[in-house]
Length: 142
Image 1 (cartoon, rainbow, N blue to C red):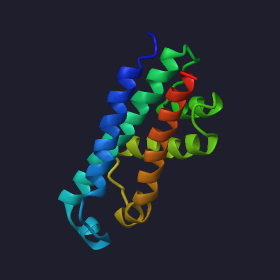
Image 2: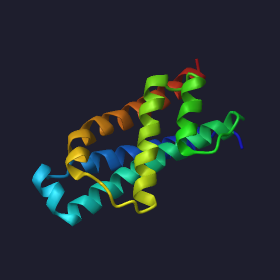
Image 3: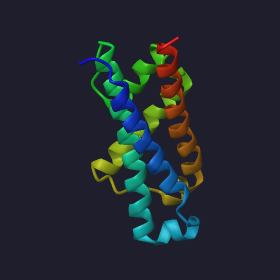
Image 4: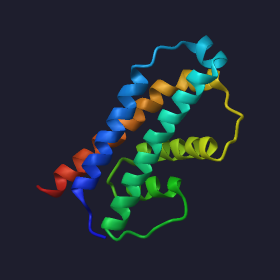
């Protein structure tokens, strides 16, 4: 399957929408720890954002006919090895894939106080991922 910049742009737009929704949520550490609705909404939106990044990574890998690996985490590492994103960001995105696996597979051992402390950095990583993918697409035309 050839690389489709249209598909990638739609996915980047959806990623941006999810991140903007999360940034617009009004909660503090106490409400996150004690309100299941806030917990569910935040984890769902983060999951959607990470899933979108995984989709972007796998689309690029397929479109460029790169060697595929087994896990979503590996997909980010491939993008790092290929200098599509920085290796440092690839490692952090691998941790995002681990988070997604915990959400999807129902491992209900979240420490929401840790999630509260980290989620703003996680949002920055997801935004940086989108920015580095945009730079990759722009550089393909130069």
